[in-house]
Image 1 (cartoon, rainbow, N blue to C red):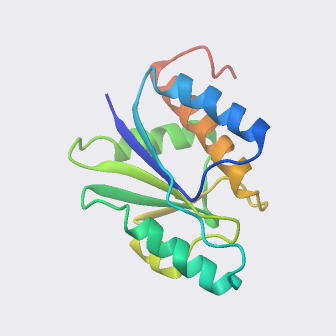
Image 2 (cartoon, one colour; image 1 turned 90 degrees about the vertical axis):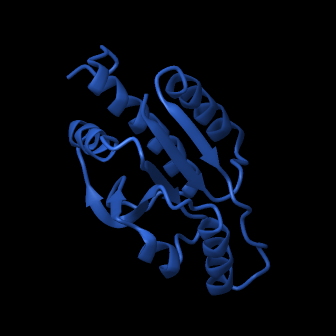
Length: 156
């Protein structure tokens, strides 16, 4: 089965986001080999630029040479759910490489992380809180897999 990684800054703190993420992780892990890595978020007392830089370093330390880095950023390419499923299928063809999605902290991703990306995708043109972005991404990952499996979860 496909291996997918998610590197997302920090642990979810808001209870309803934690529960929603847990729900989709449970569903995902029935069908995909999925790993979530949560590098530490920056000290909230740091200036924004320094926080972004520190979180970027924490993310870069988690990357492996086999990762296909895909940054989630509002300026990235948007997909329909079906197109995202096709994208996921395409980048998962070579089992030697692992699609690795990256979600930054509250202030986004550092330029150093963005430079590592082979792809940059957007969940929405609207700005999402990073905790909501994580849940939204997990649901779309589950949906993409359901589309590829021809599961009735995605009914259009």
